[in-house]
Length: 72
Image (tube, rainbow, N blue to C red):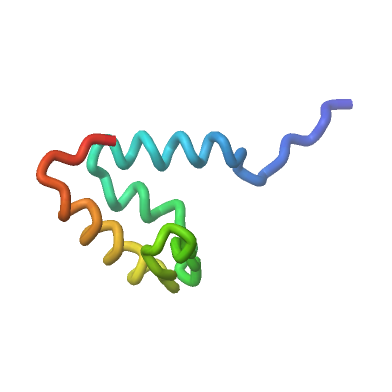
């Protein structure tokens, strides 16, 4: 009998995909990892809390755009 593989994505794999997508500047690929109702809490870093994929995307666009030559 074969063990069933989990259909839940590996969190390390998801983090690597996000970093690789960010390094390519592929914001659509980065955003594909967020649910529509995701909440990204960056308050501990003094950056606020962003509710919903549109708010998260807006933050990432603004944050990334604030650097002249951002490389991930």
